[in-house]
Image (cartoon, rainbow, N blue to C red; front, top):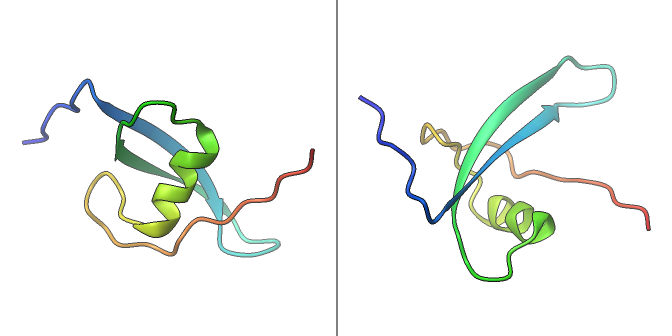
Length: 67
């Protein structure tokens, strides 16, 4: 049985890759919602506590950004 996500939860799907030339795959995360959250703050929460929506502990997420 899977619990329904709380309305105060952010559900994020992240497309990941273990290295250059490696096959990509998706992982899902659920983070408790806080006021004024944005995509970067959600990614930072996942990086601090890298546990998927199914409870699996995974490698912290990393990302590149160019402004």
